[in-house]
Image (tube, rainbow, N blue to C red; front, side, top):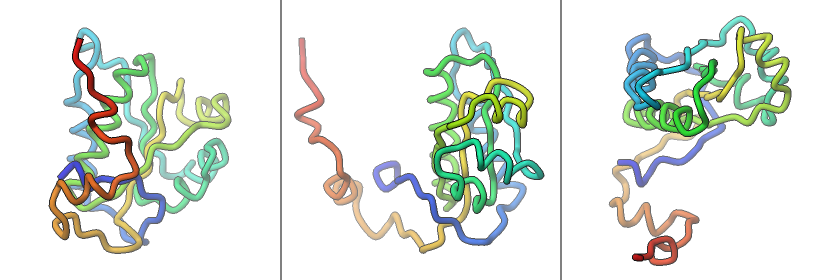
Length: 156
């Protein structure tokens, strides 16, 4: 349930199954993009993880993740956002938590990943167990630190 999805930065030391990784990546592949151009590639960061961690604002997110995906290419911000959210929601559906990571050193990230890095996503099983079914969607919504819907919606 989408209402229970939160960004998470603490990962268990458990690898992700290949099939789970494939589902996450395929969700990104299937996301919409401007004119269906898909001007991106997904770079799985393994050997260079420590170096890439030094290029983001919260290095431990990358260092401790079971999976790090850099979205690289010429895709616009809107398309990258759609792609990222698809991957993170697909992960959540598989019991995997995730977090987008801000890039502090874009030149270093580009050198490591072989092109302009549009987004760095970290994934892993949660360090603390999560139970999305423990609350209803309305209960999750009420617990979220978000502005009320009636403050965000207007009719013209």
